[in-house]
Image (cartoon, rainbow, N blue to C red):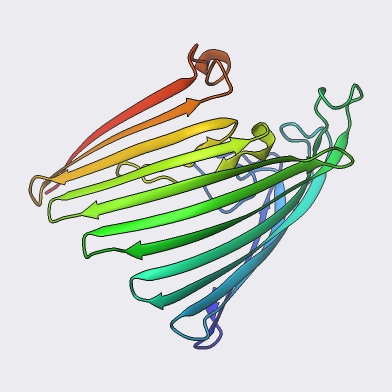
Length: 265
């Protein structure tokens, strides 16, 4: 990583993970979910002309020398992203982001009786507006659009409308979300980051048609003792069940609860 000037910043990452490299806790930079069977080069650039504007993007090229999940031959791909942020004041910000990714993947049996590897394209755009209403209240609104397609087949599309709110006081912090999503199927799913308890993170896939809500409550009893409680719920409108296999729930909704207590000295 390098600061080229007062306005330009750049990053360059080369990675190579052998197909026989195995690590239980490795979490280094990679396109795969695990650092294995991958070689790639990532280049990012950010331009900040003044305090109000910031523009950035990256280009990532990668290849997988051996077979991987749902890809029955060596494959390769690339992706790029562009993002711009405009801050007319310290309490308001507008953001626009677009991305594109091309990979190779097995054609599913629902589309072809013959199994073969074909290029796929995933793209999307999202726009957001955030505002600090008061010193304690802040709001963040976003709209997402996603598109996925196999070569020579009709694309799958979807969108999501998301409203976040946060209340921060001396001892209490409350974060919440209300989201509506509508996608043709799981291929056009939309991943959105969610706040979670300490040392945890949540990036669920918004797919099918439904509503996603969550509330995260934090209370500081003292400088030594903190508590978190998180409740999230997904309600589907077009499916009779949630999940699959051993995780399947015979109802169109799912609720998760997390409670965490920390004592430090």
